[in-house]
Image 1 (spheres, rainbow, N blue to C red):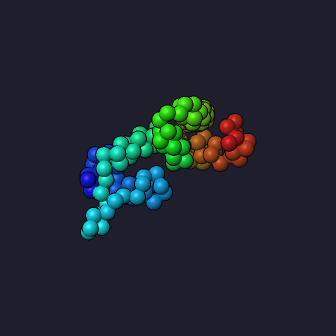
Image 2 (tube, rainbow, N blue to C red):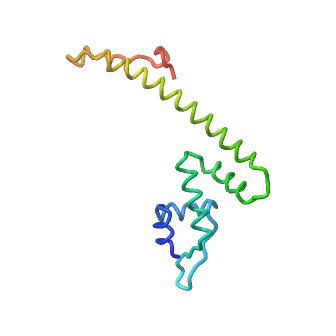
Image 3 (cartoon, helix red, strand yellow):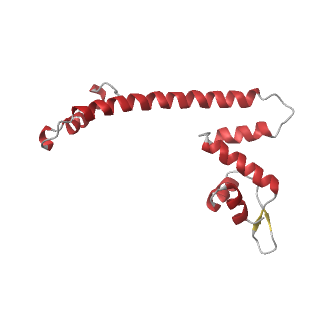
Length: 137
């Protein structure tokens, strides 16, 4: 299968496949006599794994670690669980920060009474020193 075929089979852009090869997530593809990259079914499976991990928000390094765990099928899956748990905690933290952001934005929007920019509560709030605001991030 050529690069266009694996791209279509996995829903991955060709330049992303090349990038994954460049950084070692995907092995270097075999080449035809004409220099075109060729892939096997195992490459499709690996790329599908990578794509799914990335859709779940795992970083490149986390994905690399998960691939390393996957390569040792007879070992305990504790390491995969640890990676996923750390990622889940990071997601929970991001959600918490986003909820605080949403709350602050709702307050800013609710304070808007229309009128002229010189009296705009949104502009006034954004003009304040962030360290003085309740979110202070």
